[in-house]
Length: 68
Image (tube, rainbow, N blue to C red; front, side, top):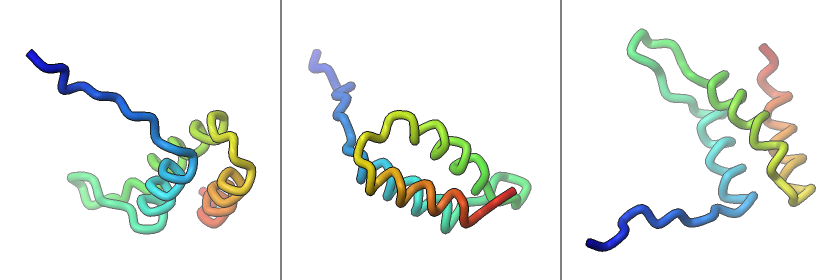
């Protein structure tokens, strides 16, 4: 049986763009509440792993745009 669980490492930019997309245009949960702050929490966690300084700053700026 082939291994279908190929784990590809995403780049810092790919991760950042994914998070920015979901922070700026969040989905809603079953109760109609947007889940922006879930993605902001994940973005804050991701900051520890992002090594590209420009990409990191881009994500930090988006996080600051939506203070809770």
